[in-house]
Length: 166
Image (cartoon, rainbow, N blue to C red; front, side, top):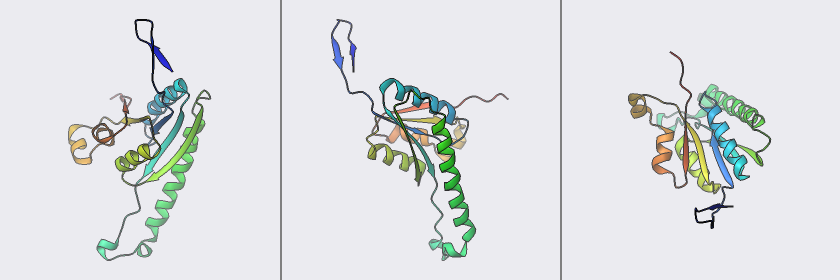
């Protein structure tokens, strides 16, 4: 693929082949999916839909074992199952002009899991949403989008969340 440079010469560049779209099933996911699908279709790239679940809590620091809290294990299993179903539903909503769509359910810290996945998959672009938290919430909670901008070794596109009417 190339582009004309104004002097009539074509400049060649590597096209994007792998686009990662991070979805959390919130209102911010729809514009992320639409944007990532549009870019993937334009480049003939594979679209990899990713959702990250937090890992099951560790109890060893408190002297407990997971067997002492079976409800947490059941909850985590159910959360993974629902996330897999939701990812498949998101995949079904991707327009047919996208070359290939994959789903990936990851576990871990959302920022680190997304950074690692993008690198492991040789992604050309990671698309994710911004929830538009206030300053205090961002300081206290951190922001996956902000972390991607600061730490990613590959391009990241942050799609603003839709504004809610008050």
